[in-house]
Image 1 (tube, helix red, strand yellow):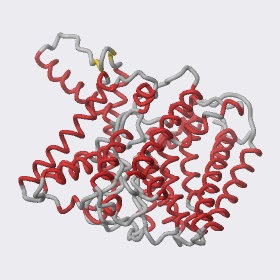
Image 2 (cartoon, one colour):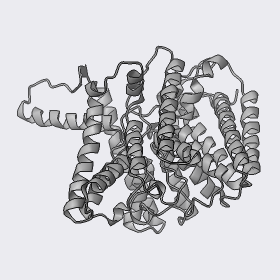
Image 3 (tube, helix red, strand yellow):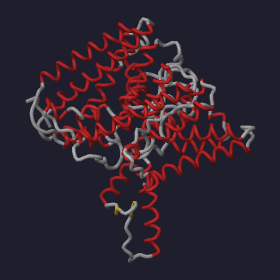
Length: 485
């Protein structure tokens, strides 16, 4: 592995991060809250360091798979490190670790926040929080590989390491075309949601920010009470629709936009939709029969909102679900593990992996009845290879072990069992709010620095689908070239 190549691409990515900071600084100038200079300075520092690193480590040739994995992990870590500067330079946060946590939560679209009071923050800082999630949603890596070939750098290794799900899907033969198409769909859906929010009476600033964080499955809000502060069923329903769309594989959206809708033929889409709808119906029925709601519409709306929000790992709230009856809370707790479809902006295990596990379990049961039968797992008309099933099984086991390990570590740091378990699951799955002291109306600002460091790591591991990060700790990854030459 060539560290020079890794540093080169990571430096280029930070140049793009700095340009985003300049956009946030422009918003800050417009609103005149006094945070523009701090954000501008953060952008200048990021641009200088990233540009200098890129210029110093220029190279020719293709990236290796090992370098691709290293670049993705290092790029996200660097993005969070530099992304913390606007919080520090504007005085929004005084602790570097807290600022790093907030930035990591943004770029990984987790939505866990340090801030107890959000509405007191200046507009530029609020916009930067939302922008980090919007960039992280589709992936700053996918954004940049659209231009890497013009710089003599191949992008497929980065794409494989970054795109969430068991197997990344090409929409076009060239990987750069795929990246551009994904971003085209992403921008189009963001614009559509913004317009619908404006029609519902949101201000332009709130509409743009919430569109950014909805499509990213992120959940950062400009309001202390999240979407609940907008006491409008219309806005709630718009958010439900776009949270659901954000959890769908973006290749399906692209096909629909080009006149080839195939949603109903996609087995994973049907599985994902069943989970959301059935969970919401179950919650609504339990809440209605328990007397938590007196009318059907708000019960259904709140249930569908929270089921969609948790399943897609968005993390928006319009109700304090910790006040719901235990049955409803347990349904939501189960949804923390699900996540969106492969190829969506959601986190979690992903519905494709869960679908394959369900099919594999059914096959194992049939094998006990028919020991000599040759039984294959199919998704649609495609047979699933054994190596894919082994990868899925290994991933899910590793995912659950990481959640358990995180809970144990947080317990050693003094947290109660419920908060430890909930915070670990919510950060590995990139959900954000959970239960206990990090519930729907709480935040992460009370945690110690060691706890914030641990959870920042778990957010990164979860966003990059575990293997990408953990491979860097494998000795064989570093057996090739280690030098900067």
